[in-house]
Length: 120
Image (tube, rainbow, N blue to C red; front, side, top):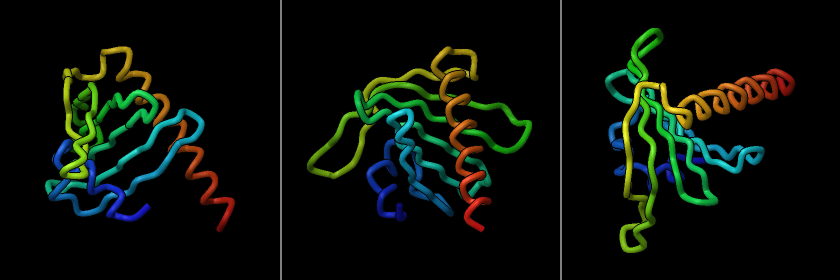
C-alpha cells in the first residue's frame, strides 16, 4: 500500500516525521502491519488487529537496542479520518501480547522475504 495508507496512523503513532512507511495486510493473522523508518533512524512496527481494533506497536532505535512495546485499543475518528490511541500500556517485551506480536511479525517478515526471493 502507498504512503497515503499510513496517513490514518500518523498521529496515533507519531509517524508524521517518517522517512519511509509501508502498510501491508497479513491475512493469516487478520492484522495490518505499519512499518516506519523514522528520521532519528529508529524503527516503528504497528500490528493493528482489524477485528477488534487492538494494536501492539514496537519501537526500536537499532539492532541490539532496547525494544519498547505499546499495546492498547484504537478508536476511529471519522471527522479527522485518523486512528486515535484510546487505551494503552507500555512494556519492554515481557508482556505475552508483545511476545506474540514479535513472533507473528518475524514469521510474516520471513515469509514476505521468501515470496520476494521467489519472484526475483
